[in-house]
Image 1 (tube, rainbow, N blue to C red):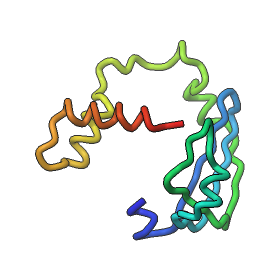
Image 2: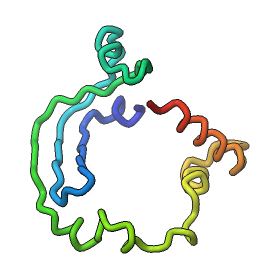
Image 3: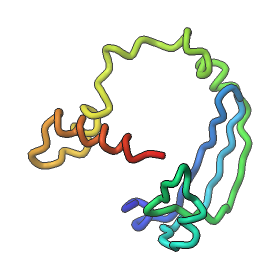
Image 4: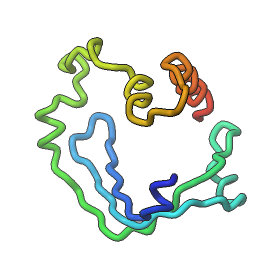
Length: 117
């Protein structure tokens, strides 16, 4: 959210499982705290605390060449990721929060997952 406050220019890439084409949207974003709007976004009884509005400036369809070549929707062709660092490890290395251990970061990410819709 701090990125949006510092620079409101955003690019969004929409992927639909099973579809090779993607949709790219460029525009200007802002943070939304309007209670009525947030209430309309509730899913399964859970209302978001914050939303992101986007004023669309450009929209592009992209052909599916990259997803076809990557076999994106073919799990049997995906590479083995067991040797890669975990999301918690990567985030800890990138953000370097003072005094936080890997175990604490793993718990934080798991708690964040529990808050999702």
